[in-house]
Length: 486
Image 1: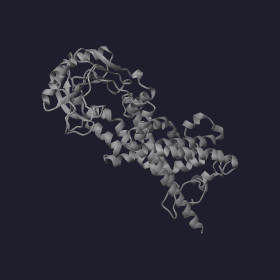
Image 2: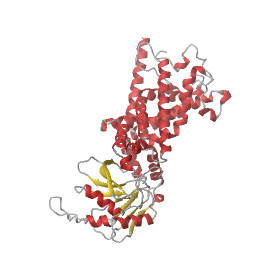
Image 3: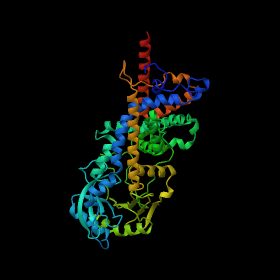
């Protein structure tokens, strides 16, 4: 296949059938077709970006089952074999404080289920961002069973945190995050354009022109079985891929910043409960003072022993108010703040309710039900929980594992199809199908598509940059083709 050829590779093989009436070259009516342009973009993006997506799929497969792996590996910290009534929560916290008197407790997560341990969380200045030290306590005996660093609001232990960072950045720091953002940004584009191509291909099967054939690989076509499996598996996993792509971009560096700004502008951000006690005054800050003048009053020290003793009342009030699933209770560091109680994102948990309790009186000073969250905040929370393999527990994790295997299969089949029809002369670059399709496509398609590309490229910067790179490569191939003709 030459660089200047305008037909897809499969149409250039000696055994390929003649071009049908569905070809974009068969008349001006074909100019309204999107499939030739979709084929070219799907080819370029798939060839150059698919390696990053494949890495994300492999690391994502490990990340998907990380909660289950964590449960096995760290069972001695997470589970106990003792039975009997639970000891008072204050006694459990006091036991943890006795093991780490050098640190100040900031929160406690009571054992969510029978056989689970209670986590007492400490701020440790030697740890990194989003890291805390957790002392795990047997709730039945109030005896510590061990301690470990935990990461993030989900309380991931070191193994799960390592797998999470591996999936996120390959442990290369901020530069490594570019790989995952590139994969998440392009995944939905490649998948949707692939769907356009697959729909067009299925519609050409005159005797099988029905929606059910979108889900079926046509095994009767022996020569094109890899193509048919590539398309059918892609359709099977498409809905989950779109969800993973969208949620993955919320954690990214550049696109994630734009997503955060958009959510703020549209009031889609996750609300939070106020822990400020009624009538409590904020820190005094006289006008014109600065941090060197001593104008800001020092925070009033809190009686830690008294705060720990109030945990039993706070926990009882929270359970009476309907917070009966796993939750974390924040221990206030100053007297003007209430205890914040918030349900955790745990397997099988679909709501996150929160409230604030005055530890001195047991009065609920503020509450925030998950039902009162904005719709988009709810969808974002569910999407992130699904991405983390927590929304449906083990079923969620197995589904993600299957999707990642399917995605890897689609990518490998795509590269295998290219390899069997790879260029063998003049250049090592991949030969894209059908040059000049943009000029032959109707303005009713090209103008909105170019406009959408500009908007998407601005909102998702890595798509914009890589799209320009694809364009430069395409122009270079075109110039090389013209030079060959001279």
